[in-house]
Amino acid sequence: MVPRKIKIDLDYLSPNNSFIYPLYASTGEKILEARVILTAEKIREVRERYGNILFYTDSGDRAVIPSYRMKIAYNKAKEIMDEILHTEKLTRTAFRDAEKVVEEIVNDLNTTEINAISLLKDLKSHEEYLYNHSVNVGILTAVFAKKRSAFSGDELKYITLGSYLHDIGSTRLDKQLLHKEGKYTVSEIQKMKRHPQLGYEILKNIEKVSPIVLQTVLFHHEKFNNRGYYGLPYENLPDFPKLTSICDIFDALTSNRPYRDAFSPTVALKSIVNTINVHFDYGIVSDFINNVGRLVNNSQNFYSRNDFCELSTQELAIIRDFGLKDIMKPKVTVFCKFLRQGGKLSVSFYKSPVEVDLIHDKDRHMTKIISNETQIATIREKLKERNIM
Ligand SMILES: [Fe+2]
Image 1 (cartoon, rainbow, N blue to C red):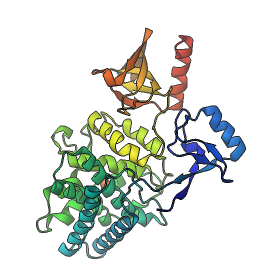
Image 2: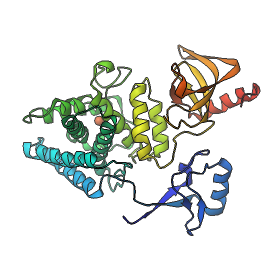
Image 3: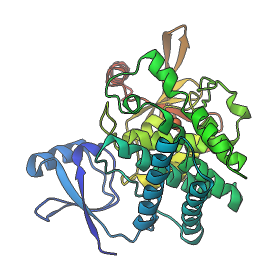
Image 4: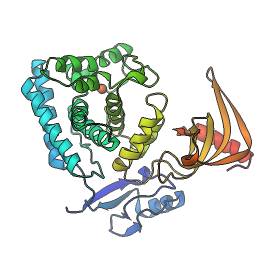
């Protein structure tokens, strides 16, 4: 494969992080070796000398789902959705074609150890988002499910098919609603929330459709706090719609939308961690970050040393070093206990902060990475007062 020269914006590289490829200036001059930690000072220096845009060369030796497979999946998604738009139905033949697309993808996964995921992100119009998104969520969920090794071959196929078709009900929604640029009104949100049910209605009469496909389409917006579209108890749901749901969120966050620009994979992964105990349980987020996160993110880590995080024990900690065996388990310094009661937050600082390697701590796990700048500044100030930083 011919190496590809890829542009990267310095804003996507957070301080104290490293990059898996060497970085070059537009002149071809090598600026930084692979995996060297980028300090804030170094980023500033590079920005002053070379500007914000740098380049890296992807040698192409990382196995990905082939681009022709992605293109076929894209064309089929477009064909199917256009067909529903005009006929309000999905034929058995079109469904079978979608199944064939998915069988090929699953076959790729069974024959190649995928170690990078290259998603469809080129959008020429808002309409294309739905097709791209179907392919991306299908691919991400397939890789995630495969890495989890908890499913049979048939289950893997149907989880992928359900994910590929998860938003098929959106084709029955008003186009203007789908591509609206501003905030949705309450009644518009109610209309949008009908898409899982509409998708289910489209698919349920297809002969021999797997319940896995139907449940994935129907339940991909349920939440850990039971406040999903149907408010179903999360613990009673099967795993597959949860896998689809997390992949759905990752792809949506990293895509340009009518109302905002795409977030970088690093920012999206942080946001996903911050859904623990709200949208997802810790186990599924940790699995996603460790198995899929590293395949979609060119940066080695998605958090930095000196980031603040919340722990499951209602404690705050500073991240000291990356979790090498498990990204979700870094070395941290725990410095306070907090209590949230009725919107009020009370904090008690420890006299002596505790050094913890989360990989060896059974009681503590990370539940949030704090990204609110005001909160970060306040915590820093408090720590300075106590000579903890
Ligand atoms: Fe959806």
